[in-house]
Image 1: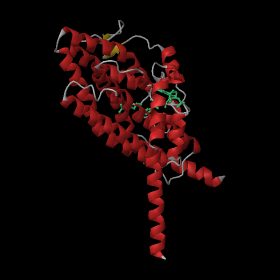
Image 2 (image 1 turned 90 degrees about the vertical axis):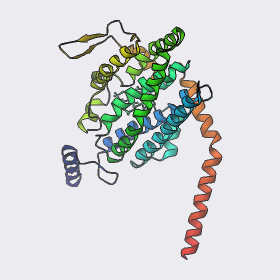
Image 3 (image 1 turned 45 degrees about the vertical axis):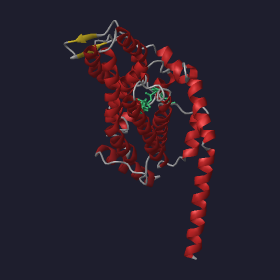
Length: 316
Ligand code: 3HC
């Protein structure tokens, strides 16, 4: 028991001194479990997040828009891979993580259970969804777990392009015809509140925030991150000439930030329980991709086995 107490002390000192915890370091089981949960759900979000945008590749209005959208979606696949690899360093294998997604046991970000109905939605996803993800991920660059922090630093480098291409889509529409501007406003109306839900429940209702902050997994709470996103996004909406769908939104001079309305938490918990507009469709698409990709996994496994056998034979 003394040994475990010493190890706990060393762990806490590292956290205190901002020394990254690495895969081979001793860590409390609960720290490991919390990280596997959060990192794998982050990875699932990246992969499921490709689906709403994937529907628009063949319908992009120009070759330039199609190329930018293709590049963004490919980036998201890569982000998913970095994060699955980071989760695997904590001792959980990829197959188990993927099965947890497909069975509905693991979560992914609620936002991806909303449909992308028009081309303006693709702009709103880049601007708002990636914008919210950036606010969260910039904070996560300083997370205490080494592989997660390094993955975030890499991912953040690509995210700003994602947000800018989305914002430019909306700027083009807002400078276009009345119908195009109305399409942009409709997208903002449907994506604003679900984007605020991406930051999770209020910290007072959060199951993990307090412990995640103590272990420096999270460096800012859900409420502060949400407020940061609102404060930076409202001026961008004003520049577009669009109206944020929140009648209580108002600049608070004293606080130097916006006061705003109330999130519909019933909707939030409904969506994360699996009853959102697209939950079933998203999991069905991921299950189909998994089934259709079985032959690739089998070929890769067979090749790796053959290569290992050849290496052993050559060494003999
Ligand atoms: N969608 C789905 N589930 C959510 C959620 C959301 N928006 N917000 C919270 N939850 C879940 C949590 O996972 C937790 O459930 P669990 O115990 O079964 O895992 C429960 O609700 C309580 O929430 P907490 O606030 O206590 O949970 P966390 O401390 O984990 O905070 C979080 C939630 C802020 C989302 C945190 O997990 C986090 O920062 N995750 C990493 C970032 C991430 O996953 N972002 C998702 C978007 S990625 C993306 O958009 C890709 C971009 O490139 C497009």
